[in-house]
Image 1: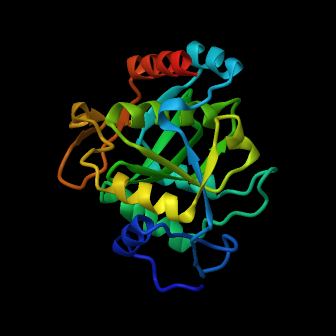
Image 2: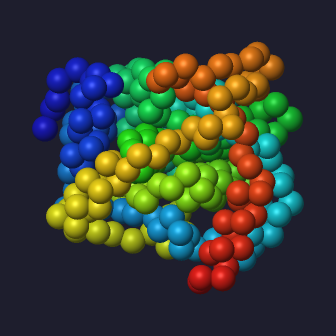
Length: 242
């Protein structure tokens, strides 16, 4: 169904009710609501990380940060790629999510190499639910590593739901599964009512990739680096429970 103009308020309401927007292509101005019967999910506390990827993670090939350059991330995710010649991210979606980022709801996880953004993902956090929107990568395993860092961060912050909307071959290696709509909505309601936050308290004063000082104001989006201790502890915990 074609929808009205996207606003941050409309998006927050829609996502909290199980709906999300997509466009047919980057060129169109039209956006449509989706509410699939089966909903893709990643298990936050039981993520499957392939052995080869674990070895790569321990080498720390990239600098991983959150929210250092959200506009660049969503632009990169909207670019066509060999495996994705068409994109569902058009201008209205980009503008709406940048507004959500400025309001402190939309976040990016970024892989940097020699001051170049080489991969990552972005999504939306409401309460204890995180809705993954899109990923991109121009370097080996960059987006996969960002997904592991995201999941470790969500587990540490107390999130209970990591929504992928659909499932695909890329996500199958991490243990993605599907929930029927009714069960998903029950879990979604519980998750969005959690009193947790995406930005940790320790990030109340952080330094951006450009070196400028950022301060945490109510509703603001703050950049912060991934905590290696959190990731190492997460990998150990999922190894013991897998």
